[in-house]
Length: 350
Image (tube, rainbow, N blue to C red; front, side):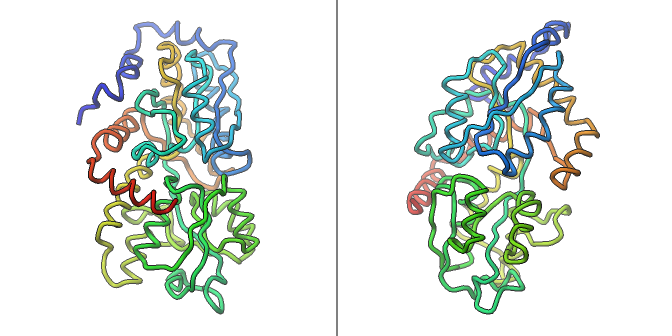
């Protein structure tokens, strides 16, 4: 499928590299590149980008200093709105964090930015999962399948259009679980504190963040239920993908309208979730240098070794072209009927 000009009008031109690399190398020499991370320090999103930042510096021609600026708020919208509306298109400020793909698809309140107008630079998936307190089931939950025996519990989330919340809500609805949905937990740290205190009994998170920090903090009080993927992933062997989990619990594959909506949500995260975006109209020499540096960085074995050391797993980067195609598939090609159904489901959770 060819990428339409709606997405790539500005970005496509930036992909046309000049004959000489001299201008790209000169562009960032002696400069500082700021990655705006739209969440608080210390969470899995922040950790991922702090691992990546020094390697990005090494590989971008001109070797700019790369720094992190945390700008939390609005479930990630505050930082994204800032980059879209206020950051200069000089290539010195880019957005680095999870993209609000479902919010973009459904026209979520508070989103004043449009990914279709922002040059995509690169990204990687962050497998999402749903977890709970073991004591949500009387006597304690030793097997994730026991979640179907839980009485009414509280799921703590970000906001109804959050992909993390949407995947968990749809999967819990498909399972027929009895839960109350409470929003307003703006980051992983708040959700972790809420679930450890018993204020809420379940939530959603990236798998790496759960395994590296949240599960250890729970000291045995928490259990991962399942991760969100259309099929099993060889890299995850301590819990099941949701379709397999559903079939084990209910005796048949998932189906129906909620399953179709969940499949759309999986498209929105399965190719990439964490991502880098430049402001609209970003200087073409800057885009050339950034994309050249990114393409070189993702082949660096030293980065993968550092990722395994810090976050416990390798990072499966996507190419710029794969990311652009995903934006096309989701934000341009999804049917109006599906968008309306998602909008109605999100509104019902508000």
